[in-house]
Image (cartoon, rainbow, N blue to C red; front, side, top):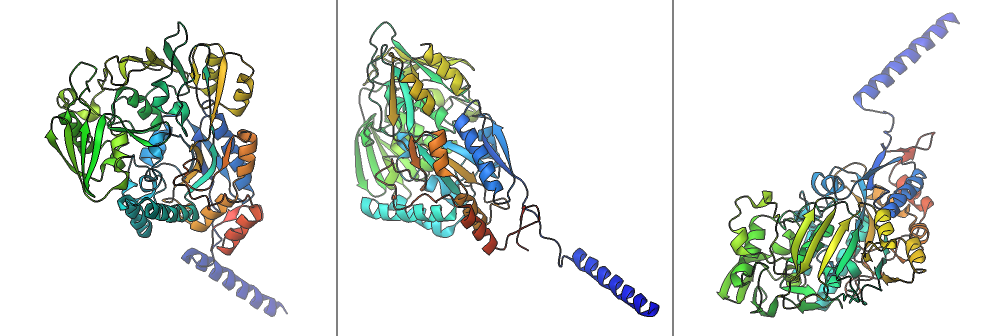
Length: 538
């Protein structure tokens, strides 16, 4: 009997040794746990709703066995540096502001998902590299027929939606307010409201307060050098000072601005004639030479914000003092709604003397826009004043942007009548302001979006099944109802319903379904340990 037990012990020892050996060689090892996810978002002081959304995702994704750590970052930096430049994130909640120049579908399609935009500073945050999608993205750019282009854009929206790299949670309404005792009803652009500089061009003083005071939630400007500007909160202030050839009007239709005529000579050749009454703030006339210089200069210096819109430009040529010929590399449908509407016109006589453009502070910016630069007190305020010689002079004497750094501080200043305009209000703030007799609140259905952007360069976000499960585990209705009090719509496509001409409304928001999300993971081979933690497939 003892001999038999001894043999059993020997066999058991051999089997254990073999199991250990196999484990060392990589066979039969325990499944690896999906590590804790870091979710980058805004600070609670600056953007409380987005911060609360992050906590809601922590609770929801925990039900999938996924641990999430929220990392709040200040805007504009270090948030922009981490996401836009270093790509040092796994998941990030980004708030995309509404602006008129983003209505052309190229901005949220080619600009955000083409392989060429997967560069530092580019908008392809997720690292999408799909040759088939690239072909569609390029095709929509080259299609001038609106109906045919819409068909392609719908295909792109569907592809992006099914790929689950941008998880659009909500498209919130723009909630804004202004002091109606100081200023008459402004012409507020659809979709964007006060987020677009054009809202300040015609706002009319009613009394002694001639300068519009705008309470800003950001802490300061990062730069006023058009080459270096990389986000909308910075760029929109540049449009106060710098003209563009065209603009998207308050009704969302393209309109001539510094240009008086745009003639399509061929699918790859466009002649633009400018007004003959244009001048820069220092009194120098703005000519076709300045237009050519602006486009050539921004292309040569790889201006980040405008790079996608400038990429199709092959060359420019001055035909006469008021006409510039643009030659395109290929047909480019968004040329008027993107390129001509976004690119600022720079004074050649100033910038051609700058030896290091990417290091130039542009401390006294000279443009030709409706407002001219007055002063910038870092971390405090940025001021522009009326340019009387502009072809469309402003009704007010100027605009003072006061930096408060947080929404609550800006809101308090508005309540105390220290500023006249405030945007990006919270729903509860609107309810409170409606009780004030000096306040006019504004609700604008917009293209603004709160979106979870996933970095597919990193594990586990490189797995389409994992991304699909996360998308089903977003409590969109709860977020809209609780954090926005219903001021908005549930998110689905990257082109919001407010962009009526292009949004594919057949794409519906995914229903919040934890069980369905877990089933997707289970079918993909994921498992859970005894503590409920998610494990990678074997």
